[in-house]
Image (cartoon, rainbow over all chains, first blue to last red; front, top):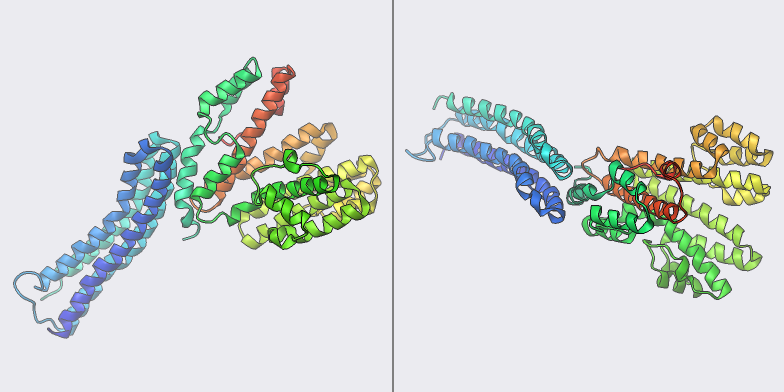
Length: 157
Length: 312
């Protein structure tokens, strides 16, 4: 295994790890807020569940980016390529947008969605507004994933 | 991640806020024909959930990861109970009928600590006051003097703890209750012609209402007192106090409710919990006023006038 390949694998690991941590933190925060509501009013379970799911997507984006790196470098499939350090650094850099943005946006989306749980608790009819507000944060995770994927696909191997 | 440890508790409180009485509920209650009808309307509207403050407090403590910050809200009850216990010990009576719940220290622990003079069993913010009040009461046998000393100490304790916890909501709460209480005390002292020494003992002082200025103006008479208050943030309160004490009391409760309303916009932290407690306190007070008014056959206008501001 070349140094370049090691760097690429580190990149894949970072994408899955950091975005996953962001999602885990975000989902757990919304879960806490949702539990409080459901313990008092169990009928709101389905409505708050939607909000709890939202910060979970960052982890999924991290997984997608990591899979792309592993496929492009041949770790998954045809056999690992002999990557140069420059190529490895390229994959590592390509993983950073979704790794960092995934971490931060996961946590922030969790905060927004947890605040949205309060809207759902008090005014269940306005649940859609809470979802839209939390979904806005998602935009930046999608943009970061897009950039990461474009970079990963355009590195010459 | 400021305040996110309260996410669970805030969620529960938001869900419970739906059971708080709204404007239309209060109107319905005002239109009720009797005290029993008030009770039945209230029960059907809220399902008697968290109908007394003790239940509200237990509910908040059950959900909050840390009740320390909220305990400040009960300080005044603690100090009131201290007054009751001290007088009961001196006069050999049962303090239970004067005991207010919820409080941070139970009646039996408080009675034990004071009667055995083991003040270190009391919460830290009460220890010195309990010792000094006991000595003052046994030395002078002046209940009014000891009461005013305890009341002032309660406000000082609220101020100190709110500063220590560093929560803006609690600091504002401390400032408001101190100012409201100080103005009322100064006005009463002024009317009763109390000495400067008595006022010094009774008035707490706050950044908004300067203690020395308040005492100086109260000693000079009611006109001077109102002239001074007009120069402070409490000019509106002073104008109401001139009209009647009941209007002033309502203003004080309403201004605290306005503070609670600000916390309604917050999604995290202990503030929404404190706001809910204040909201329930006001709701229970409104029900009490309604019951008394119904019992004495007060007209709708009088009842409406006395109703405290609502949270929802």
